[in-house]
Image (tube, rainbow, N blue to C red):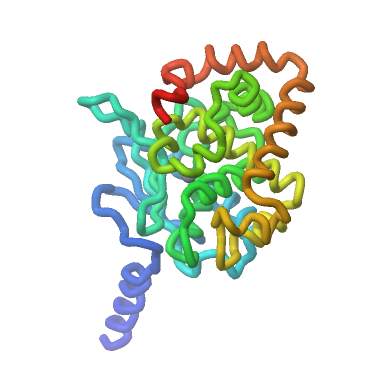
Length: 289
Ligand SMILES: [Zn+2]
């Protein structure tokens, strides 16, 4: 009898005490665990096949991310990942976007292309880092997550490039003069980031890629784990130049890359006709910022 009780106790404690970053959500009827994740979904909303693929992909991305950030910077508990279908509000038709909440839980919605997986690497960067840093500088964190996701999966078909080259998409905004200046994006991050997401995400991603490619990923990682992480006044200490100077260097570089890209104008046209960007209105100087 004693043995049976012990076995039952051990068995149930194993289930109850899986440690997670954040609380499990009670709005899902299905749950599965992999080595580093607890996945939650609703049976009628996501298929077993989608969850199988997501679990495998999440573990692969986790291992790549761990190599890049260092094991010591990875969580000691499992990350929660939820799957919420299309995320379209039946009344307003407003679409929810993948995000990480204040507890570090990853919430995914399907995209037109790439199902649930397109945003996994980007959101995982946020989930790993949130609540572990001396400060959270939103503009920097967004740029870092995008640059790391690009570094790990350059051929993603998901938001915001939809598989089009970054040189072309980010370059178009800059060369056409319809992009938002990076300094404006930084200062007005909370107001503009989602509202003007087709402009902000690709331009900021290209800027942080440029830093990683020009100065090396190691330098970006050192800044990402410094006490003054992401602080605008800390750029000279980490990059030998103030933020504004790095931005003009980047603009010159991106302009060159755009003009050197064969068929850039045609591709940019296609991007604006064939992707969800066509449903959105670009933010404009003097009106939106
Ligand atoms: Zn993000």
